[in-house]
Image (cartoon, rainbow, N blue to C red; front, side, top):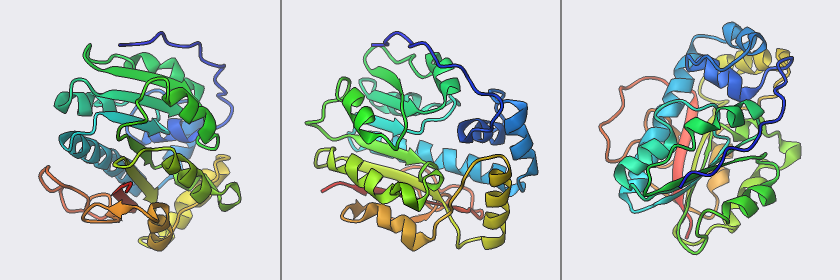
Length: 262
């Protein structure tokens, strides 16, 4: 099942956007000079972090599919980069359904890549902001069965939500809408692993008009309060793996974790 692609809003190319900077860091071409200007000033480790973060998502999604999860809600999807989440999980569970959401209209402009589902499964896309969880949930309920477990992913997203916008409340509202047996998959930039690099990245994003707030491990763990963390818990993105072979050992400035909703 593949729904029609909605019409995207006009893309603002005068301001950098996190999804497009991330695309640049991953070596993508769906970005603009204003995004490249931010990316070029970031330390080389930022590219490594983007790759490591993407690889964590692949491992976590594949593992969840092997555990029988066949419904996924991916918030803050970013610009399509193969393999996309639905391609990962539908290799394991061809009938899997995936709902993507992002607030950058360029993602919607490329939504065709996200909406090419296996015929047995389904994908859908909504242009929405994580700061409006109600809109996301309302749309997702038209595609996903909220009586059965859902894996919700917030990949490298919440560090763009400052404290005054109540990031923990946002995540809690989303979690509270999911049925028992669902999962939260989350990765987040770390402030306490490589502090000098974290400060440099924060400053360069700020120059591009993007507010970025790294958090400590304790602050990242707080997103999982009340949930059952899956081993190995909240670790760096390169340390998190389950059924897949262990990733190449390397430093990472990203925390990552998966937890089950009791």
